[in-house]
Structure formats: structure tokens, C-alpha cells
Image (tube, rainbow over all chains, first blue to last red; front, side):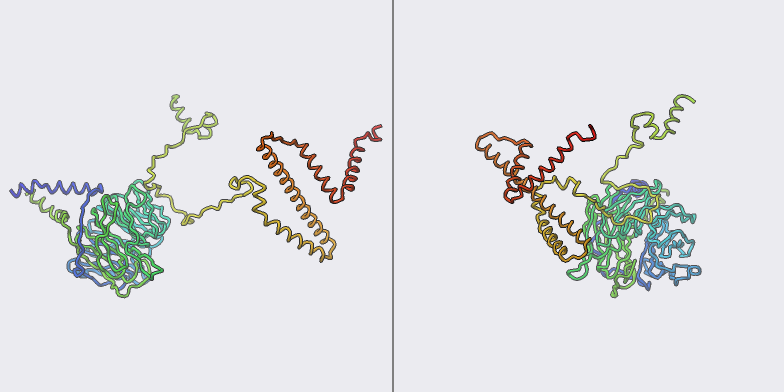
Length: 391
Length: 207
């Protein structure tokens, strides 16, 4: 009878259906969260200088983080230990040193967890083997600092964005450069991509968010922010969220040139009563294929938001108190935890210095809401069930 | 080559201009504009490199208007003009006084001559303006009289140009009589007429 039940459930079919929906961008995992317990936040310290970016491996076991001195550290999520440290070198030792010699601005990891790429202010893109943290290759070609990196999900195609206003496409498996795309009028501050052969970039002061369609060699241009757009993340294949330095957070859809939802001064304002400036949004993160968005600034907390019906509204959910500049935010693949890269300075410059903050990585566990489907469990379990079926 | 092929080759090689010249009619637009959703994002090619000088902030071009030829300034109305620019009369008066003072002080003959000419020009302009003003006033009073007559019921009559000129002349004589220059004016006029008449007479040469 157990066999019958398992057969009726058809996990393979379900998984295939999920994959297809994800590809189309229409899979929605509506997840409502309660505020997490502040005591359960784990702080991992190891970097000397402020953290600029971080990535979580696709199996949610490891976290890679990079800092302003060029060091890259591989952490183990469960134990919180440092597995590998790739220290940053001094300026001028590019030939001899294995790692970076300038500030690392962005990182990406391939969806099979094999390659880790990091980009720095020295116009270099370094390719590392994620398991052993050995440097494999270096991509040169950009003419200014590399500010955004992202893999196409499911492949080894890499997209990179730089301060020279160009987007380059590389093939990491073959160590090859593919092409360059132009269009931005100002430095590119962020880049993200999913499984489609297109990526989205945020253009800083030119106020545009551009979606690059690589096979058609065209771009879609979106306007709507007033400040410099500093960070961007895709929520699903059709929607993205971006944050700007005037404190606004915007939700975008591919069919409308203006944002679907815009929240101004999302983290409040700072300064004296007559000279109030909004807190800059320095990082945004979105749980893939769900309605949960997180934004980070240096206002002392990470804010969680819920996207309304059809992504037309952005409602605040809760605040997670976290002191310092939240330079990077990433959700785990299953949505179990949120990782924040905290520093004493903003990742792009030194306008302020939060002395009371610590340069660290914070792992924030998230409670699951009542109606959340445990698709994570299904993901991990289906090879086993397939074996059951076979046997 | 078949006729069809030849036609195709012709249409492909001919430029739009030559087609217009030979065809005589306007050719159809080269490409159908794709239906672009106005609310949707702009789609552009991603292969064109961005030029070094790029538009960061849009600068509005200053539109230069000449108020003399611009429709926005409206039609010229002398009364309105006089009212709004009446302050210029005071300035002109001041300038005239200044020039008179300079003339008194001046020693240089050439400079004196120039200043005198300038002064004459100014006084003449003033006089011309006054004359125009008087004329306008006269016309206005005439129109008012006409309107009153029309109100009273009598039929309004309009003066011919020659009659107007006669009236003007009469007024001029009255003015001259008052100032006592009538005799000199009349004598000058007689002399001028005499010269003109002499020109009309047959000359000695044509005998």
C-alpha cells in the first residue's frame, strides 16, 4: 500500500511540472513569514575589512564571502567554520599572488556548485573551483572595475557587468569570451540572471534597469527610479526588485516600463531635523519564485517585505535588527535562512563608518509560515523516491 | 531572365529616389513600424557602443523669439504702446537736457556740430511725435462726435481724405496765425510754387 501511495503521488511528474513552471516564470511559492528570533542570528567573523559580497552554494551548505581587502573565505553553514581562506594581496603583486589584489566587488557561483567567480576593482574576473578553492582561470577584457557577475542557471555561461558600462558574456567551462553588450550610460552597479538566456542590470545614475536579451542582441529599458540604482535581483523570470540610493525600492515587471510598485524612503531618513537624507538601500534580495523580498541599508535593520497580488504592491513584513552596513543579502535556495554580509563601511566607498558594527556574516534563520509548501523537502527527497519506484 | 525576375531585380536595385522620379508617385514606407505598447519598455539594439559624450542631463534648448515678428506679441496698438512706454518720454527729456548742457560746455567745432545735429534730430522726433498724437486725438474726437450724432438719431457721415486734409490745413493756418508766422510761411510757399511753375513752362532750349 505504501508503494501504491508513492506511485499515486508521482514525484517525477511533479518535479517536472515544477521545473517547467519555474522556467516559464510562473511558479509561485507564496510564503508568509513571522519575524525571526534575534537571538538565533549567527554571526561569523573572519574578515578584517568590510564584507562587499557573498554567495550561497546551491546546496545551501557553504557560503563564500569577499571583503574590501580582496580576501575570499569559504564558510560551512552548519558549523560556522572557515573552510578555506584566500587572502587578498598587496597592490602590485598581481603576477605572483593567487588571489585578488584589489577590492572584490561581486561574486557568483554556478548552479551545479562547481565554479566560483569573483570580480574586483582591478578589471579581473577570477575563476575558482568551488570545492577546493583553487584558482583555475582569469578573465581579462573589462576596462574598468567588474561590478556584477552571475551565471545562467543550469549552464556555465557567465554574465559580467563592469564600470566601463558594458556587459560581457563568457563561457567558463571553455574559458572563452563570447560577446559584449552596450547600452548603459553610467556605471553598472548590479547584475542578476536566472535560467533564461537573459540578464538584468541596474545602471546607477543613468536611472535605468535594462534586461538584456542575449540571443536577440537587444535590450529592454526600464525607467522609474530617481536616485542611483545600486542593487538588483530577479524574483522570478518576469519580475525583479531593485534598490536605489534615495531609499526607494521598486518592483518591476517585464511588460511595463515603469515600476509596478515603488516604496520611497524604505529605511527611513537620517540626519538632523532640517537636513534629512534617506538611508541608501545597499542590498536587495529576493527568495526565488516567491513573494518575499529583503532590503538592507545602514539604518540598523534588515527589512523583509511581501509582494502583493501580481507584484503590484510591496508591503513591509518585519524588521530584523542588524547593526552596520548591510552590503549583501542572499536567501538560501529553500528559504530556510537569510545571509547578510555586514561591514563597517558601504561596499562601494567610505562615506560613513559605523564603528559599532562588526565586519561579519550573519546567518538569520527564517521561520516558515503555515501555508508554505515544503518543496525543499521534495527536492532533496525525490532521488530517493525515484529509487523506491524503480525498486 | 523571366519578366518577373527582371522586375524583382529592378525593384531591389533601384533607390527610393529613382523610384519616385520615374514612378511619379510616393513609394510606400520602407518598413512597417512595429506596434509598440506605449507603456512597455523600449527595446533597443544592444550592440551599438555608447559614445564617449553622452547625455546625462537633458538640456532644454533656448528658443529665441523676436518680438517684432512673433505672433505672441500681438498687433501694434498705438494707445497701448504709448501707455506702456510712456516712461521713455521722461528719459528722452533728460537726455535732451544733457546734450544741451554738453553743447554749452563744448569747445571743439566738429563735436559741437555733431551735438547740434543730434539735438536737432531729437527735437524733430519730439515734434513729429506730438503731431502724430494731435492727429490721433483729432480723429478720436471726430469719431466721438459721430457716435453721439448716431445716438441722437442723425445719420453719421464719413469724411473723405481730401476733406480731412483741408481740415488739417485750416487748423495749421489757425495755429500759424496765433504764433504770427503766417506771413513768412505763405511767402515761402509762394516762392516754392513759383519755382515749380517755372519748371513746367517751355524752356529757351526747346525753341
